[in-house]
Length: 367
Image (tube, rainbow, N blue to C red; front, side, top):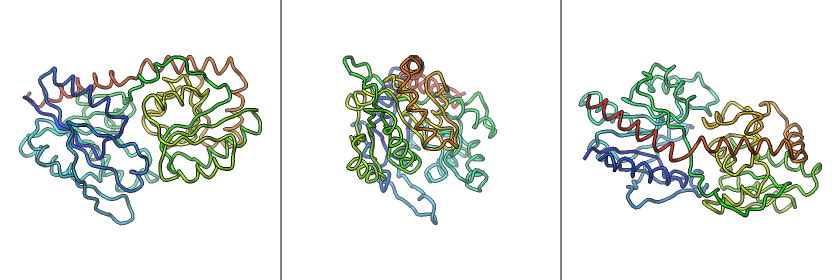
């Protein structure tokens, strides 16, 4: 049987439904999928969103400090990878396993190696640095590319990788838990759902919420998530009656929390949480900052959400939120657009695209 290995630094809760569907689809095509992953450590572990799969292999990753930068990582998965026909790894300079794999692939023509990623480091403060130039150059090295979004694919093509060996996977999460009935939506409640770390601009969020509370009677902010900045949220929740902190929620519990809210507030980094906002009909309000994840592309200002200028102040953000909460017809139109968008992005579609890309990559390898 043809064998495909995916190596990931960790296994997050939101990825489990995707891997299950991908494994089922590949099995029907007589392809065995093996997943090898490490465990979260440090601040990443504080998010509390790791998962377990009985059929996956957990390895002990080795962190190697590199100056003041984020540590390089060695994942002892070389044996599994070399026994595969295709190994899919994260496109990241710090993933040391990538280098012997790529070298072996070029010399022995097996295993074929594919990158999976954004096409660039979208959170880099120095896009012209050596690290980012190296990453752009390395984008040309694998045999195949699995790009998160069309924008990710375009970055890979600009780096010089052949477009006929790029699969756009349309990164998504399973939102089936949002198909729940009877959830009462509070007209003055907003929600934040995501990790609690610096790129999310939590101080800005809390300042904004305090200003909205002054203008909108009965305003509530529900915060769902965990991370290194949790204490800041908990401290405010003890002092502000309008703030409720729920911690990390998953599955139906998360769906019910988000679906009970009229708006999703995300002044900082937008990622897969935009799909929660679509599926719940709780349109997202955000800002056009430069470090969003690829899924920001799914937002269309004025149709399925609201995107303010990157330089918007907390007062500007608060005014936009308050105006929406006090304008039911405008909010309803955005809600309809969000729900319509949710039908375009699904974990089933992502698994279909990924399966097609894997089969094409294997065909190219045999070819």
